[in-house]
Length: 494
Image (cartoon, rainbow, N blue to C red; front, top):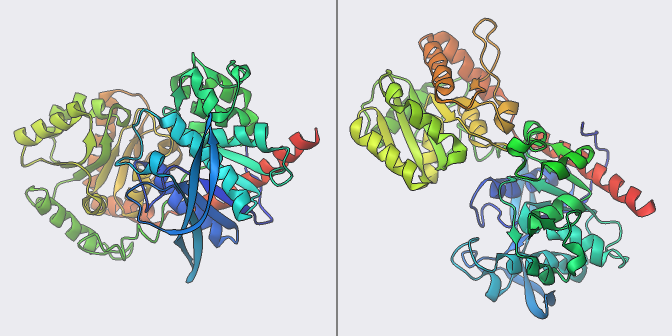
């Protein structure tokens, strides 16, 4: 469905388990640290709430209160910090509330514990209790992924009779449907819910109770992070067994592409790259390539340099690269890899580096500075994903004039348009079939165009001029909030 134009600002509480720069495991944190800033610059009163993990330095304490979790009460301590939103020379502070509890969050990692259901049941209820304690009544609570899925459920089933909460709408964003928060039936008790909620129309999900399902069923409107992914998840191939619910709620399901922070990702000012450059002065990009080759132990040759910055997991299409690796190494090119993940793929890239030390550079791990140098110094960027709800890598690479080669799925399909040599239209190279030689064919088309330096230079400039900032996406989210409030009002008055 289309997003309507907005004509008013809102009070928005953005709830997320991770937020840049405080805690990050994936793209959710980037969104949670960027979208609220863009919303604030549009005049909204937007605030963020997240858990305070042990790695986050202590903040000013502003409140504490008891939170019911099953049969026991736990104390929530609210601490306050902020992040800065900048637009056209104006700086605004976006408040960030940290829900602190030593028992649940003072741990080495964000996720991966036996009591995940209890931790995020506590967090979800603490969010709702917090807004009343602080006297901040948002128009919309924007929930993100399964960790916040119980918030719309609790709001409607347990808090709606309180006049303070009546009229608060909810938006639930799916960042990756594969991660669902499914737990044993007994976890219902953590939310203060009885067995009547353990049925297919409510929280039961293939023998478990699902926090993701709570968000999908009880939120006023749903959205995900690209239009194509919103369509894909309504079908079995991508629906992760939720396609039936998403088909039922298709009229409430929207797709809005993520953006990037164009101040952080700016080749003209980025301090992490060795040479800054602009769309009109690309010499710095050539020099970044030479420095990247040196840093990765590769000969400084004038051949196409391809980059991959990724979690090394099946989702990212690495089996396709594995299927053509030997053929790829026979081409006149170089490849640099940065990432960590599945041991099989880590070993695969190490073995390739050892066999072709003049053609492939590999760093296993994650290095933010090196990632930026790959985005800035490569000629082409690989994202052959099996599925990709939105993807940020292709947006960053476009910003730095590094041409993406992607599989046409999810947000990759929405943001990378296949280059047409007859018209010069398009901003990258894409393929549809999930098959190794489909990827190879797309790479070869890019290599062929690279030989025509005039056409390649034009493609770089086109890519760098595109607008993938959060400003456009934030405007669409404001329309989405308007829809959520209208939906909520219709339900209240029905």
